[in-house]
Image 1 (cartoon, rainbow, N blue to C red):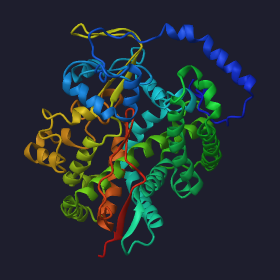
Image 2 (image 1 turned 60 degrees about the vertical axis):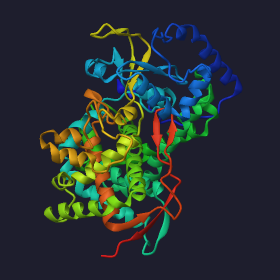
Image 3 (image 1 turned 90 degrees about the vertical axis):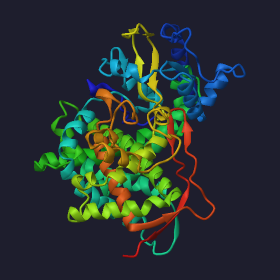
Image 4 (image 1 turned 45 degrees about the horizontal axis):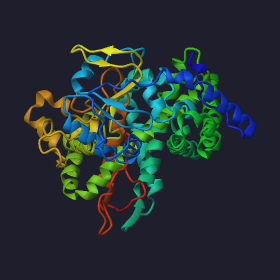
Length: 503
């Protein structure tokens, strides 16, 4: 059935105004049906941002670029109770953590997880978020099972890509590090996707990077139009045409790899191999499109996380030397290799990564679900059908009751907690997905690729720390993160000064 999902391999073609008028007419014809699915607001539950001076439209516009403020206000004013935040797609109901445990295993017929990504990235048009079950299963089982075997190749690719991206840094040189890291993550992830055939293919890495950027831009441009005309507006958004060209190119590159392996009866330890073995009737075209979707997730998480971490290290250089000492000691114990066992000895690095994530998670709201039918919870609270729910993960991370002096960045906060109570050390790790750290989600839909992301991020940060000195240019400070609704992104246009370390 998944082959029937529009994954968008075909390019968009220009359409006439006559055709557009037909599309608009069709869209208008479903408005009556759509009205039957309108959100029912809960009486007595506050909408944050409506302080008597703003209209709901103004509050929704504020949420687009100032969502942190609204979410923190709502969480701190109504802690332990539900509240709404205003968005262009309707008011989202923020639920307290006590309800998450009840809902974590709810079926999609009651609380739909993929639907939230379809909404976030306009997936009915861009295809981002369209439901697939293959790659989450593959990542959760095969990738995590063979992670130790995959990591040496990933480490080699990071080294090679940094050497290619930063060929001459013997003297201080300003580098737009966000671009460098995006390329490094694209190549390292591609090595896991399909070996060096993909990771060293410049057209592929460019395509997966451009696909990520174009998908994000297309979704934001679509949101500038009223929902009812977006199916027509898509034909005037250049990034959407580019998205479908990316699918076509992915098809041209990946299908021959699959055919060649099939002909030679060759097996590899990578994502393409695992998907092929578990395809269950899915076409090779579908597998190529899924690979591009996985690439979107990889770049949208790892590159952003590493950028935040490097910005934090530039802003707080006092952490650099202790981290280098810990890393060198752990690597020495493992013959110089960044193995999973070595990572377990790097609790300070893991702690710094989690503290960076606490202040700058990729998503300000996690555990998002679209409630499909009225849900009555154990205390009698009813969530109406057609309500989008979520948890304000960033605001939870700044709760003094959970993290003393929460507004203060303490890079070794979680290292110290692990030292004080080793029995609960797992709860303090970067990859922990629990009610006090919702950045990875929670329950059955917690990010299945977080173990790979954790290892990939650590490999990149280790190579930066051991291979380079880095700092902000004189007079420059850590750039403020960019907010767009629920997304929290680093300013990738900022330069940092780099130079290679002398052994």
